[in-house]
Length: 315
Image 1 (cartoon, rainbow, N blue to C red):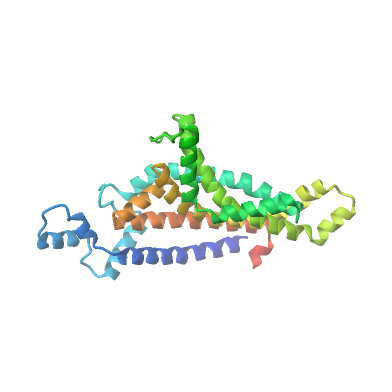
Image 2 (image 1 turned 90 degrees about the horizontal axis):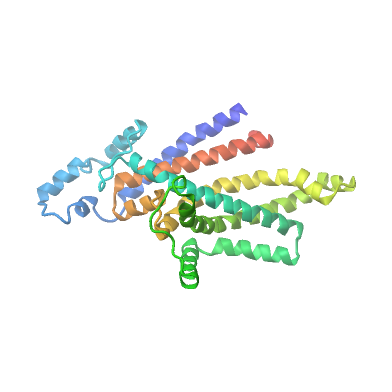
């Protein structure tokens, strides 16, 4: 187990380094000049623009810019936003609780919907509940979250005269107002994520139910419910955990859209705003932090799977 964890940690470092290179390169390939954007509303001369570019370090070769940025990252300096002039780490810390709460609600809903429906679909294979569950799974995977969010707001406002609160309130200050704002985007994101969980739970459980040890358990006269919960589900949930890890990236992507639609002051809304404003230090730092978060979650999922299934350590 120690060797497996060491190997995964060694893979973690080059993966993060490649992501850093990719993020830095993509930001440099963005159309438009950030210095011209920053100076467009003021009466700057060409010399002033050149001085601003030198102050930001953009007059240096790209390789040198990347080396300086990487060294600052290793020191824990994520840079400052070009617009707010605040350290990016403070901006992220301020918004992170909102996105974590949204992600936790979404994962909770996806588990509550995806796993039970997947189990029913597998146990009642080729029946009406199975066909309905498979249709729901395909629908959850196909419907974009922004369309679902727009329809939800339209239906709630037109039919029930309800609109989401405009001001975010932390959960521990006022749980009721907080949930009014967070529940619907969390549910929408959870529905999107539940499609993959339904399909994976169904496929894995069907495969497990065809194994010899399940037939042996039934031949001994054990009740189907006992065989399902005691023997089949444990082995079914191991690959399902991998899907949960992959869905973390979906949480990040979905939060960008849903936080913008529902006006949540989270990391997703922050990323959306800094990309629109070409705030390249904030874009680089925010994307690298999000990548680090997703890689960390996947590392924990992989280690948990290897702990539960010893075969994975050797593969």
